[in-house]
Image 1: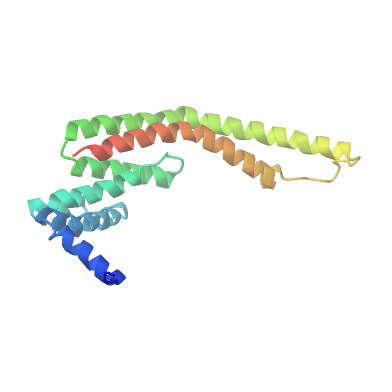
Image 2 (image 1 turned 30 degrees about the vertical axis):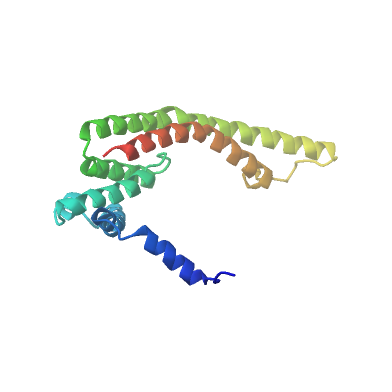
Length: 196
């Protein structure tokens, strides 16, 4: 019967089979997380990307840029608040700095801006209209239910917007309306991610 190996021995055998990491792997392991941290500082207005990137060797800058790009792309979202709009602008400006293929990056970023513009012009109106229609519909249903139960509405004020059923239905409708924009945005972000 063969020797029974401990989990540690098995793990050590697997590690030994992997061999030594390459210089490229070591650089990536070190500088990719540093790039991600740098992007977070940049988004908080605590760092300037060009200045920070110039502090590193060319070999390291490649992985720093990739880490920065990963975080900035993740932070591009539908512009449904002033804070999101500000973060989107910062992320887009930062991506222009770190992407090597500037022309293709600019093209994709322009498409992202078009999605934002369409959302601002059409999407927000659709969402407001859908909200008003749902609110009116729920209000009518509540009135009808009270009348059927023999109750009267005099002196009773029910805040439709605080009803759990209303909130759940609104969440579904809003997700459906925004989902179309989010899908296109995610496709563009993926294309941006694949660029150097």
